[in-house]
Each structure stands twice: as C-alpha cells, then as structure tokens.
Length: 114
Length: 109
Image 1 (cartoon, each protein chain N blue to C red):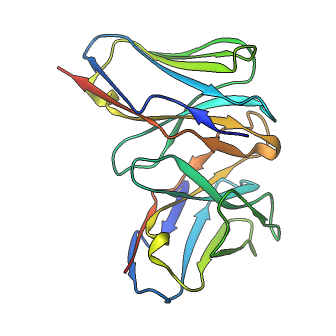
Image 2 (cartoon, rainbow over the protein chains, first blue to last red):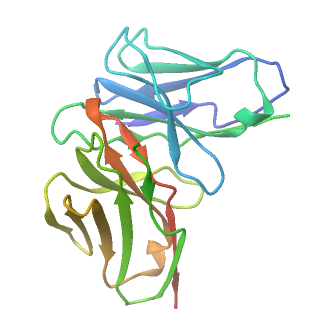
C-alpha cells in the first residue's frame, strides 16, 4: 500500500496563476483533509470531505476550492495564487470510524508563490 | 474557542525523560491526539486520549485530565532520533482536528 500520496512535491507559481494539488489514498478511507503548515507553526485545516461527492470548509478556506469526485482522490485548487499562500500543503485521510482520531498524512507539497 | 497551548521548544539529553504539556479550551472537546513530525517530513500519529488517564505505547505515554483541560506527552529513554516537533491536536465534532503550534524537541548527546 502506498498510503497517502501527493502530487506535485514542489511547485513555484507566479502571483495570479492557478494550480491543482492532487491527493490520493489507497486505504479506502472515507474522510480526507487538506491542511497548510507555515514555518514554525501547526497545521491549519483548509477543507475536508467526509465522503465521495462531499466537501466542507475548514478553518482557512478562503482562496481555495476542493473536489472529491472519487473516493480515493481529493483535489485542492488555487484559482489565483497569492504570496500569502506560500506554504507546505498536507493531505490526510482517516477511516472515520474507531479509533476516529488517527489521520494518515501524505508527504506534503511545498508551494512558493512569487 | 478551540485553541491549544504548548511550549515552543524543549531541550533534553539522551537517555532522559521529557514531558511536553498541552492545554486546551473545553468547548466542543472530544479527545487529545499527539503527532510527531521530523524536519521536512509528514506528521505521524503517536497517541490519543479520549478519557482521563495515561495511555502507554512503548517509550511514549500520553496523559489527559479533562477536568483540568490539560494533557501531556511523556517521552522516556530519549534517543537522538526523537528530535522532532510534537503537536497536540484536539478532536472536535465530526472527526476534525485542531492542532497546537508544536513543540520542537532537541535531544542532545
């Protein structure tokens, strides 16, 4: 099992450009999440999904959109990138059952917006 | 609110014991998790406490006191490889997590 994978690993964007980050999991998990982590800080939840076809806003959703068309994939989109979106983006997934608290994280995508 | 407080940095020597504290606000609290993150790596799950008391997993233990809105992670027999950041995270409704700012642990020889 690959677990949670993220594409790309690193990307440089210019202000105003758009991009999509892809997250895939092969654990048949119901729940998937997108976080951002800024230097020296904890993770903040951007958007999440509790099942195929569903999405919901997290703590810091502005400037991002998501889609969960297939159970195993969760896409994060930036329509018009801003320097404030320079960060490391982590995708995670969880079973949603018991124990409910274990989230499995991907390796991260490092995004630099110039 | 759902914020958590933990020390930003802790230093200890190899073989010692270290305790990383975490306080949280009680509103909507379901439980407390701990995650480890090495530099450049992804967070990995360490432990979870839903009820008061101590949970032990090898060299790591985690404690929760719901009445004090307080928990801690205890690392015993410290090894150099334990140098990492440790995050407490509260479980909210719907299996969502709110993370603390992280404690950077430096283990010295």
